[in-house]
Image (cartoon, rainbow, N blue to C red; front, top):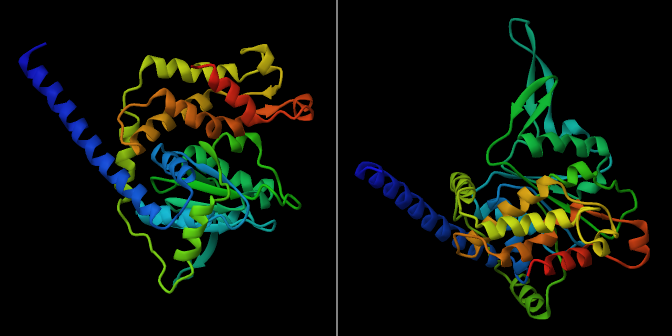
Length: 336
C-alpha cells in the first residue's frame, strides 16, 4: 500500500473516530435529558433509546399509568423529532392514519384529487393501544414499518426519515381487542415491558410531579443527528464471537434445531429478522453505554426483548407453566 493510500485510510479512520465521539456525547446527553423527566424506568428508557438508535420500532407493553405516553413524548422532544400520537380505537379506519384523497375544484371549474396526509407522516408516531384497532387498520401500519412508504389509491407516498413507530399495549384488559398478527409483531425491533417503579423511584415521582413546577424536556439532538447516529451504528465493528453468539441463540430457539429439552416447548421460533434485530440492537446498546463495540453482556441483556414477541410456546408447555422469558433465559445461559 502506498503512502497516499495509508494517509487516506488514516484520515477515514480519524473521521469515523471523531464522528463516534460526537455521537457518544449526544447520546449521553439524550439519555440524561430523558432522565430529568422519566424516573425509575432505567431499563425501559435504555431499551427504547436503543430501539430508536438502531433504527427500529418498539412495542411498549404495560398497564395504564406507567408513563408510556410521557416517555414517547419526551423522546420526541429530546431527539428533536416531529412526533404525533394516534389513539387506536375499534372504529379507527386506515384512512385516519394514512390519509386520503379529496376532490377539489379550481376557480376555472377543473376538478382534481389532492392527497391529504394523515398522522403517519411524522418522524415518530405513537400508536396508543394499538391492539384496540381492527386488523384492517393495524395492517395499514405494516407497509410503512417495513418499507417506509405508504400506497394510497395506487400512488406511493414516502414517509419522513427517520421514521419510527412506538406502539403501546395494555396486557390486562383484552376484551374488545385484536391481537397483533405475527407478521406485524416481527416488524417491531423489541417488545419493551414497562413494569411498576420501585419504591424510591415512585417517591421521587410523587414529589416531583405534584408540585407547582414540573420538569420539561428539551431538545439535545436533531433528526439529522439521529440519522447520522443510526448510520454510525451500522459501521461499528462486531467480533466473530458476538456474531456466533447471536446465531447460537436465534437458531437454538427454533424447533428441531436446538437442545431438544428446550425446543420441545417451542411451537415456532424467530426468523433471520430476529438475528438482524439482535445485531443492530447490541451495537446501539454499546453506543448508549459509551462503547464502540458490543459485548456478550449486550446480547444477554437484549435477547429477551428482541426474541419474546417472535416466539410461541406449545399448548403443552403453557399447561406446564413454562414462559417465553424462562425459555429464552435458558438459551442465553448456554452462550457462557
